[in-house]
Length: 127
Image 1 (tube, rainbow, N blue to C red):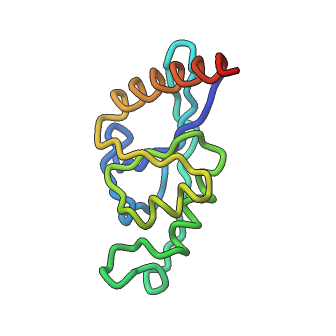
Image 2: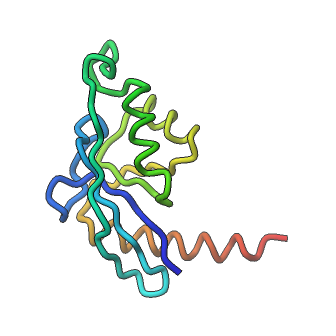
């Protein structure tokens, strides 16, 4: 079985973008059996900075968080290098599993698939 992961990456090799820096997201399909993953597509996020910046200028405005949430709605996980508490909470409230993972894409995908497989097996044994 396969599932999708969205990643905030500027080079396709590292998860290196903070939430407020995102202009596009890379989407990958992961084979849970062997942990292999393949690139599916890039998804652009239309930015409107004047509406999205909060008082600290971090681009965590609700319009931006909603756009990102919509862009990753078909993904099981969304990986970023760093995210603040407000946008993280907003994504969680919209059922987006956002994880800070400032690692190489290979390392993050391997660790996340191991977690996914273990977690899935535990859920199947709950009565």
